[in-house]
Length: 374
Image (cartoon, rainbow, N blue to C red; front, side, top):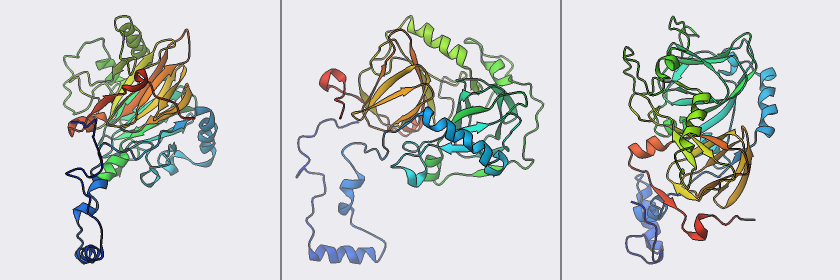
């Protein structure tokens, strides 16, 4: 339940308003000797009127980062780095190396013939392919080829590794993980594969070939994992689905034509703790503002436009990345008059929903649009 209107935040019942004095301070000092404290001294801070985001909205421009990411190829080998990644750092979440909220993100690059060692961890992970040809991933023995704008999952606890074929091209992709959340819960594990790399006799691309059919379920594939059997969501059918859906819907006033990536077996999110969406903004479409619990990291898959996040405008184009912290008003606009724009995004919504923390609110003032700060 979200409290949207409070008559007065001063002298209201149920809120701490104890005036400090010398006798109380002495009492607090005595409590501290026993590793205890008075709740009323911290209650207003730990129980805010509404969610209080700890992250700042940030835009990471591909034009700024691409050269820096490519520089790492000549400086660090993937087998030495473990993962050759330039991570995205939120200025307000540097203590936990988060890009937004409890979500980690970075940009990984590999050149032809390179491969990173297999490992697994408690954190869930995903990839969104930015450029290159010949990249692949192996998840618990399932090897899949990757192309531009493909979305691939590496669920928590699965052995996984990445590489680029000898005849491929230097490839770059965005990583997304819930490492900060897993560490916050003090539940993270990390393990290196005992043989360094996986060996497998499973047919190439068996997961997308088995489960990538148009609404069809493979009768002989007995999948019993808690995550999606379709580990790679290819761009071409994804974009076609968006275009088809756009023909029969007006879309959301807050997100345009939006579709959620799902586990085709259950209809649930592809992984337990993180979700992902793809959305289309029609030519010149400008959505209205809303906010919700849960953090979101966006990747511009196609086109260009801008978003207003917490009253500040951020202009973006293809392969730029930006974040929307929890409970922060945001709206999006496609600057193109003839072409659609597509945004890929991942989030921690499944965690919010499972814990019963999900809440959403539309902006009612100014016809649903924010006033942009100078």
